[in-house]
Length: 200
Image (tube, rainbow, N blue to C red; front, top):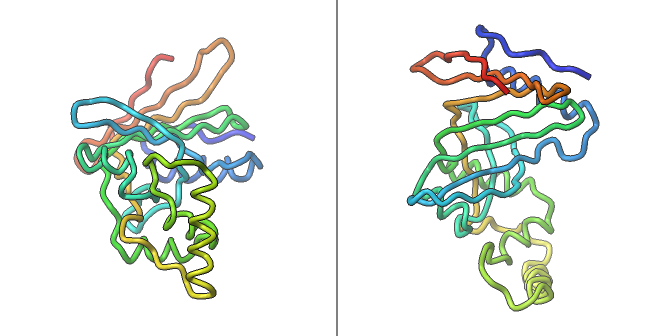
């Protein structure tokens, strides 16, 4: 399976959607997995895998997390991020850079309500990025919470919700033998996109 290569007159968001659909159609495991890189106000970076959860109405890329997590703290201090999608079955990757904003509470509520119940319970019970005594303690907290809530809906905790990344730079990478990869870059310039080719 191949993908359409970038061209100067293509919109990068539409091209990303094409490539993502191709990655899903390829049958690869978890095409929605992406690396999220953040940095502290002083520039110390960190990266982790999160899940791409579609686009918001403005066409920004969404993910959800605990607002008390390390990544959230770094985004509070330095609201920019880089994303990386790697789809080995297609031998392509997409890099995204942009400003990050929190999603409205209603959007976070709607997504939280759609999650599997165990994921909801885990989001409430887990003190994400904080030390715990042992893993069993966390499992016990989930079990206790499930018993307390019973059959009622799990409420979204105030410290959990979504973010949107508004891209101002895209790189579409097409792999080739001999490390002679093609790199196509779109950089936002006002309301338009400047298109460049980069050497591998």
